[in-house]
Length: 394
Image (cartoon, rainbow, N blue to C red; front, top):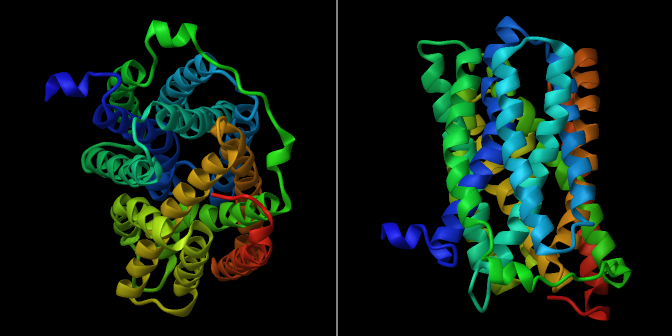
């Protein structure tokens, strides 16, 4: 078993390394910020500054997504994946060792770039390395790493906070990330013989059909749908009457619900078609977004977290896997283009969120606007289905 886990060409080892990479690149470098936000709001951050930091992080992620489109050969992909893992650790360490606002802004931007390298380029490496005839279900397992990223970063953070500070939590997360990175860098690489035979695939504009453009627009709306709860969910729950202190429980449930979600959604997509399943997932996400505006019930708001976790992670897997399939031999092209669109939504959403929160004094208006934008994404997909038969799709 140990030998299998250290075999670079073993599917189990590849999937494990891919999941652990996501835990570091997305969990430590991104979602731990959401987990620690309530503590940092009490002692260090204002809600407005937290929103700006989130927007900066997503701006870095957007830059990385656009950059990834032009990474053509496997040697370069491996190099930038490694850079992304290192940046994820270093930028987390910055948050543990300084309270300088300028350094925090810079580190959040760089962390976003690193996260993009891990999720997009790392995902492309995993897709290439996996030895399956059909990789859809296997990639569902890979993207379950997003759920594990939330759960593991949340558990580490809350454990440290029992006797320490949020600064201690950032330091612990950095050390955890460093340890895990050694394994992922070893497994998600290629033998020297394979490297010599690496093939460069040209970037073709022909894949950007009207059908694909509609998918990209829909993924933009999902980027907006992801951000508000992905940044503020613990504080949203804590702000409701009678629910102060339940925010981190809600966030933990997000991760737990997210772990199996990509696997289940990918299996449904295999049977019923990706676009059909994406529409259903986005409709459920809208319900989850609106729950905090309609009820202060702890059970319904924990359900809101479960709906969020079980949909946004599945939607990332569904969109990126579909993009990878549509792109054929160069999956990173469409995966990068789609994530760039997603990233634009991510950058804008925190900014309108904090503006509406400052104006109205609560999260309701922000959640209404977010739900409306996600609904527009469903409309884009419904129109895409109408023209689907005109194009060759997977």
